[in-house]
Structure formats: structure tokens, C-alpha cells
Length: 93
Image 1 (cartoon, rainbow, N blue to C red):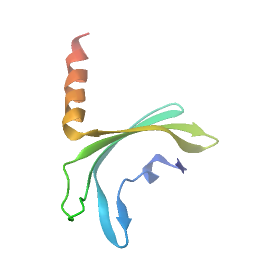
Image 2 (cartoon, rainbow, N blue to C red):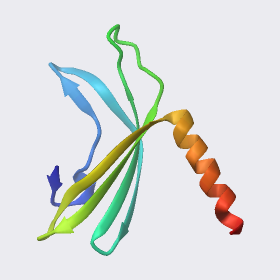
Image 3 (cartoon, rainbow, N blue to C red):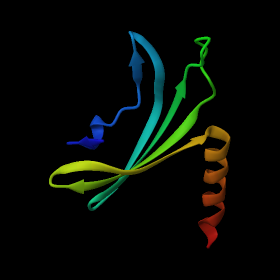
């Protein structure tokens, strides 16, 4: 994935006119030629019901005036919240 601006990175997905993935929230951290985007999203199951939320972490690097995705990881929401708690516990280090 290559984008001109980080605002172009959206996680909504529609297939045959039906929304199958919905972006709930996002946060961007940018430093120099690197950026990280955290996106909370949910997906539909085969019955059309929304599954529990997940978090995608996307890492981008700026190359020739464009942003190129370098890595991505998806975490179930409980794991993402556990990660946040762990990082918060490091505040006193």
C-alpha cells in the first residue's frame, strides 16, 4: 500500500455494496520519515452480525514524497488493551 498522505489510510471496506469492515477510530503518530497508525475496527461475520472490535497497527515509511506500508499487525481488542496496560505500567521506568 502506497499513499500520498496518511489521511488517505482508511480501514472501511465494502464488498458488493455491503460494508464488511468498519473503521471505528484511528490515531496517527508521525516522526520524521516514519509513521504508525492504530486503527480500531470491526468486521461482519458470515451471518452479517458485527464481530468484536480489533486493532490494526500499521507502520509506514516515507519514500519519494509518498508513504509506503512497511508492516502491519492485527490484535483482538482484549490483547490490544492488555498491551496498553503493559505500556502504561512502564510509565515509572
